[in-house]
Image 1: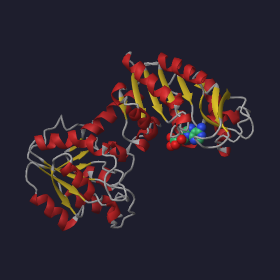
Image 2 (image 1 turned 180 degrees about the vertical axis):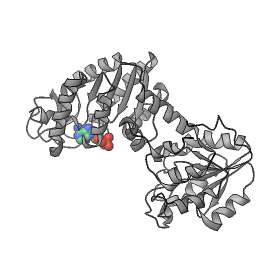
Image 3 (image 1 turned 90 degrees about the horizontal axis):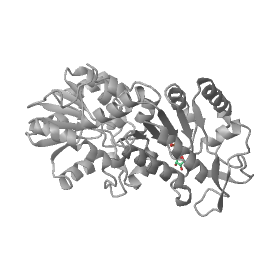
Amino acid sequence: MIKSIDEVRIEGKKVLVRVDFNVPLDDERQVTDDTRIKESLPTIDKIIDYGSIPVLMSHLGRPKGEINLKYSLKPVADLMIDKYGYDVIFAVDCVGERALQAVNEAAVGQVVLLENLRFHKEEEKNDLEFAKQLAQLGDAYVNDAFGSAHRAHASTEAVAKLFDTRLAGYLMINEIEYLGKTVTNPVKPFVAVLGGAKISGKIDVIKYLMDKCSSILIGGGMAYTFFKAMGYNIGKSLLEEDRIQMAKELLDEAKTKNVKLILPSDTIIADSFSNDASFKTVKSDSIPDGWMGMDIGPDTQKLFNEEISKGRTIVWNGPMGVFEMDNFAKGTYSIARQLADVTGRGAITIVGGGDSAAAINKMNFQNKVTHVSTGGGASLEYLEGKILPGVAALEI
Ligand code: AMP
């Protein structure tokens, strides 16, 4: 059983909180997108409300176990102070004397932010001694870093087990609730919409969902490997030669299991990989040599939208085309629109993965779908039916 910070009152304590403040920084080391910070503020506020002191820890980027100030979390501390008005004590190390000193100095109402966990190589090694050092900084542990929960690291796994009081923050609870429960036990019909560049990254997802979904709609670059497997000419479209056999097997498996695996009936093709390329719509089995598939066509949009309308639970992961280029973004946006529409009519809609979430955000539909997952890799692993180590470690 996993308990949330609502279920256990953590009063008058120092609470070690794993957050995901792995935010993008520009050349001046200013935070360019603070979504991940904003999303953990309710958890931080709740701990402060309990009269406890949050001791926040996170990684940022890939400093590879060495101190590299390019990846310092100091800009995050500054942003929490300047933009959100928190009284933050920044500790220049996440363990040892300087961390302990910052924690001991902190008073109720203040927040401690520890320096980047990955300045120590022990973090990614899930090192127990390092976890013990971290554990000295709190009387209770909260994990709100869903985006890091698929990694068994010292701050997500080893340390959790050292606390009797180990809880999930609000962000984590939401993800477990929506991604975990909904996908494991969906209200049927359950429809999955999968896209993105490569089939290789989604094979396990397709396999897992095959046992759960009534239909799986496939768009994006990975559709072309399926087309190749079906004997179509795909021109210069994205192809994973070494996955053609796997694509064949998935098509067969879908037939055996009576799952509708639906591929685009038409495709927008371009003569080069550029927004300025010439482009046109063709049937998916008629892509000429020298052209490449860039987006699903209008017939496919209609077909996919009809299928989505039949679902009571819909999961979407991965764009339908090269949506970073305006001319090839329509398919992806049509899925976002349809998801918002069916949510309004009572369906449960879950959007996972960075690109699909970006498309939803760009259209300002965050509140028009049931749940937008914050974790790319972590949400994909949920869709593969895997148990995430950072979530499992919270079990009591
Ligand atoms: P992924 O990380 O596998 O979810 O892939 C996301 C990327 O897939 C995005 O950057 C899209 O531009 C890309 N993508 C989607 N459709 C295509 C396509 N037809 N050809 C090439 N890239 C694509």
